[in-house]
Image (cartoon, rainbow, N blue to C red; front, side, top):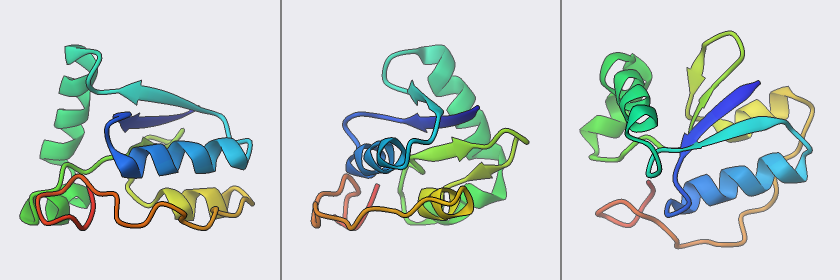
Length: 105
């Protein structure tokens, strides 16, 4: 099963969950705010995988992060939904962001 590392405080994570639910895709949501063990596991991914390099450069967190069944980590949840035969919903909540510059999470 796909694991989604995220936070309910993150607008991008909320959109990701809504889209996964709307497309009836199974996933385990791991709230990094609820468990230090889960936060540490996410930070291991973030600190060691090149996929997070751009996030770190622009001071974003890198959430939501999906860990696919084969262990691949992706930040492109829309692409994952499409790869599963789903269709991402239109973004109805423009402007919500948690980055310092207001452009993302």
